Image (cartoon, rainbow over all chains, first blue to last red; front, top):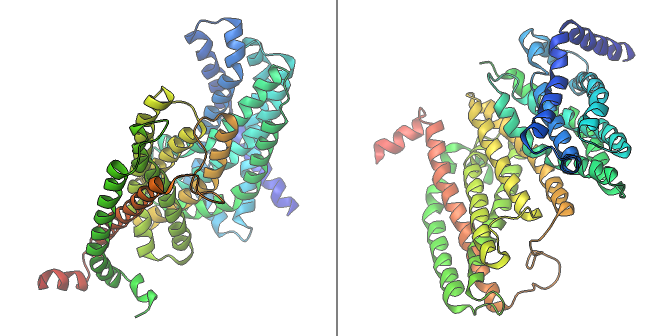
Length: 225
Length: 243
């Protein structure tokens, strides 16, 4: 089992390393989307400070949506997914390993650029720290939920807009809880309630997403356009 | 004559033909009684005056928008486990009806909101979660139409329906804790309804009318889908040669 885990993780890391330009895209996208807001409005520091948590979290959601959409594409086209479905290992474990590895690699650069973005939006130190915390908790939920839907439509061509239509309504609770946590932290108010709800969502998706993704993947792989 | 028999397309079609006129008749009757009772006989509200009468259109639509989703989720579970085609047909034709009920709830609600709350739209918990429900219905219909293979389309939209079902209470409570203005439940709650009988009875009639309307639309569409799916079978040919 340990060798399975290590070989899956090494495979995902190596594949991402060989496509470095593609790997950097979500974080650049995150920065650019966040920058559109100050440029589009009158950039008063007070206004930016009030809108910052919301804007940054909307950008996180869009970046996750962008990166989760292509999660299974190369595996689908080179036939790896069919091998996974046929392999003796439980499919839910395989997709969990892939999803968690890819999520971890997505989140590292995002965590890295958060302080810079926080400077742009005049967030306080508490705001930055809780942006980090909500990013780590909330984005794993987003990624695992998105993985299930991406698996379902892996065989469809031009599925980007469809994925957005399926996922954005499901992402709303995370957006509410995460941006509320950061906003409350930035203002120095008690934030246990939204943070706990975010944690509950995260636990729920870690438990439910792997079996759902496995079911979805069997449907998605069967579809041959 | 067992229930199992009606799971085959042929007998299900016959059952639909048999039920359809009755369901339609009961629906129209309940609708006439409910509208007369609600618009003419029920007293005006002491605070809202005559405006409140939109309630008899708004509340049944809201109840059905959630009820239809529950039926679709049940159908999705049954389909994903036992692969009964007739059950998937029910899920398929329910989605547009459910989406329309949701839209009707939103429209009547905002028309009611303008005179009473002073605004067509407010980012209130119930309004927001109803809007999200509408988008989830759209997603279910979109994913079904994206697959050209009907068997996989059915399974994919079933999975989406169930993921949405898990998410609906989460969405609901996330927005409840976030902000709220809409009044709380007056009928579907523990204890006695907090509504006078003269206003409650038209509401229940309208609820009945909406349910029978949904059932009638369901039966018509199920018949159409069954014929379309089984157009090359002998029972369809004999049915149409006889007529």
